Image (cartoon, rainbow, N blue to C red):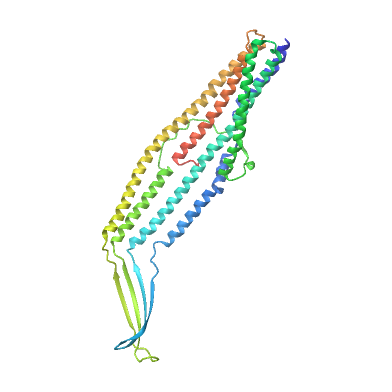
Length: 418
């Protein structure tokens, strides 16, 4: 009876603590939306990308315009005599006039670069948000894992003390005591590993969100694991959008190269000062000349080769797009399986396995409290450890579900949406 009186309050306390741990599967979380917003505003990689886009936009403003006219000023070292007088100075202005389409498509090429850089910035943002979400759920999982391990260790240590105190004189119990001590040491090492990993993951969050996490408030609402039937649609996939933007730019490059089949024109005007009465006298009638020049497009093969090169590059992009579409579909099927599998395992553990394990524990505890001599204390311990193991696995599936779900949103191009 003395042993029974000693064990009952300990067992009741253990049951209560274990049930509290299971029922509160996830405590308050960091506010993920706050982290996302901080990343958008503060991350230096995004700022660097924005400056690159700004530079290209400024460059685009300078394209599509005629080059500056050329001005010439000439002096005759020795005056040239004409019937109207001697030629002394000559002044000329000329302007190159390329085909209008050449100017237009040159500007379109730079604007295409702007579109590509904007999409690359969006891809960078989506990649950072994906990493942030996955790191966020890993960070919270580590805390939950640490709690489960610590509670498991507490239970085992309690039973170690019981075995040492009440069964030290029985040799047949010694093997169980050794096993408990081994389990305790293994769990301590796991706690050490998790404890050391938490600050490492925290630093990753700090780098991604670009702020001090000590200032973040905890969210009172919990994300629920539910069946979400996302349909594969690649219209907003960022990788395909970048390829499409490259194809559009490549079309402009093809048209730009084709424009060189058209000749350039040069319009010029020259004024010549003529001195009719010699040095120091009034000038005579000055001479004006207006001319129009045209470029001779002789080496057309050179232009054809440049056009062909751009067409091959365009075809390469088409092939790349087809391959990317196929690989995205395969990746989608893989990630969809991971989402559904994690959700199914989570719900199985939560709705079936944990309730059944609790029922078994209640039955063992009832036998113990009714002084059933056939009760096995080690069976009670195994069921408690099984309950804690299921709790940890449920948290693992919770993490896996939302990490895979973030991957799905990344493929669809909606990772930044809540």
